[in-house]
Amino acid sequence: MFNNKKLITFFFFIMLVNFNATYASDIESLQLIQILKDDVNDVDGLGNPRSVKVLSDNSKVFVSSGDDNALAVFNLDENFNLTFSQVFKNASTNINGLEGASGVTYFDHGNQVVVTGFYDGALTKFSKSNRSYRFSQFISDGLSYDRVFDSDVPVGELDNFGLLGAWDIVKTTNEKQLYVASYMSNAISILDIMSDKKISLNRVVKDAKPLSNDLGKPIAVALSPLNNELYVLGFDGHQLTIYDRSVRGDLLVKQVLKNGVAGVKQFINPQKMVVSPNGRFLYVACSGSNSLVVFHKLDTGQYAFLQAINNSDIGGSGLEGASSLAISSDGLKIYVAGESGSGLYLFSASADGRLSYKNKLLSVHDNKLNRISSITVTDDNRHLLVATGKGNSLFVFKIKTL
Image (cartoon, rainbow, N blue to C red; front, side, top):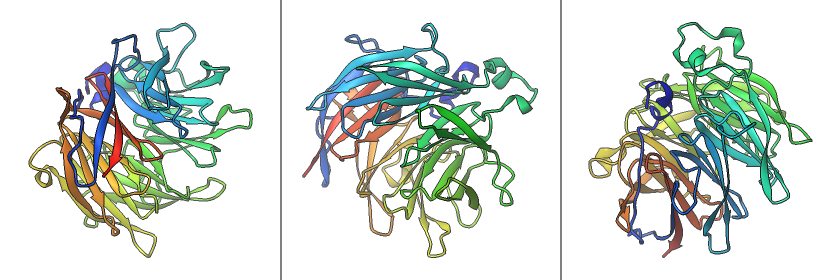
């Protein structure tokens, strides 16, 4: 999808999906609850789903759609069944910023939902009023697709917000700040959440000096459990930039890890990362090397390469375009998928952070799990949601511990 209006899938090598009602494993089984498909049974907003977030109280699900240019909202019942509620699209009157919708997060108990727009170079907020959501804020430099993606002339000072090619977004635990990774801006945007719930730009970070002159074209960002470290993945630079973060939000570059340096292997086009609950391990899906790379924290506070897993470790295929990753809240299970591959892969994590391959899920009820674009585990570890990009589908499972 790296051609003009489809650049969004150059990161993800595209998708479909399918499972078996039970996931055969010595750890757990997955029981299929539901399959939702775009434009089926009045469901909308699942065209190339890129990110899925579930409220911590399991009352709502938010899905960003890269092809529908949309945010879809679903209600959850006590049995974890999803019911379509609302959809917001760029085609709608007075709604902006959702072209190539990618990252999504929420704050204020889910009363505020924020979406990044890759092609619009934007951040769009929706606020809950009574029982429904409404468009409430739009942040963007307003540069056209042609100006950003097709022009050979640098945008320079026209890029004020650092949101061009905005892809991933994460919030701090205290819900005071948002961090956005933007590929075309080659930057991290730091935004403050004000007392009135409006979002305001704090600053834009474009380098990791003196260790690196740039961020390697970021597409993923994460925070440590204590929010005292910020991690940035540079897709083109094959790099991981780590900042120390103060209580006030000040950043000090700590380390830059790059493929082929200091023992780092198979770290090509890193695209998605998760952090262990104890903050000691980083797990990174790398789409260019079809691999899962593990870093561990040393006693010095620095990180070092620990392990790399690729197709040869799981039977020969499946992790092509590795780009989806999720970790259970206890840190014991890691789910991985490749957007050019087939299946969902389960690993167990040992006390030293090393991963062991457990099993894979290839299909469910004659629906193949191909080209997965997003994996989400609920906070209570009881449910798993799997989205397929070009399959335009969302699979909902109950995790049953044996």
